[in-house]
Image (cartoon, rainbow, N blue to C red; front, side):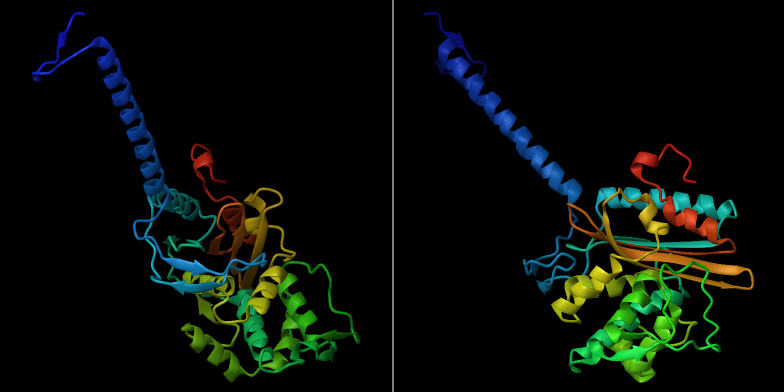
Length: 337
């Protein structure tokens, strides 16, 4: 049988042995490619600083209680940085067009922490968004005051309340009808009902609300001019999702209520049909100047995420369009509006 020299080696191999070597080499190359693809996938999908977390797996639909976390900071991956650049370009376009004056955006993966923000520390009028922390403060009080949420209240119209609302309510409170405090909280959140809010406020003092903000590390105010940033407001949803302040049952309950919010514009417009969104919107119009915000948690097959958008301008419809038409990689070659 003819022998073949292998360059650089003194050994001689047969053609059969050579075929085995080539097959083995090919297998090793293929294995290396698979490993490379796996590492490439993880490096592309994950953050540089992976958060070490332990979460309670249970029957909850809206929360994922955090038991332990080694780090509170996540870094941006490549896809998130690309999306940040895309949204910055979009915001520049709509501001230059005069459709809005200012836009702030905050995004955060709720399971491992990578986040992205544009103008995330700019402050806006909290307006109706503040109904969420009010509800959280009352639920916290109820955990040490059994029966509080079942307290009955009769609705009597307050002609001096001056609580006008731009968006129509699905169901208004009926004069003389009695509601439990828990029912009023739900109406306050689902319909953003200002009359329900006035009744809820009777069950908690300004000092208790201020203490609630202090415990969460957020600067406090209880008047209607309270300013807050998208990043600060996002903290309320993270606290609910992690069940780190309220009981698991109450955290789950509030997020379930927020999934029934009647406002169908804003964030809901660009989500696929059937996607669960637990959110709160807020609007404020004074002397031709207005603000419109929508913040919430998007639940999907992959880990849920937090998205918060705040806008300032003079036309509500234009501000709505900005929230309803965020740029995505699929829309990069289209007009954003």
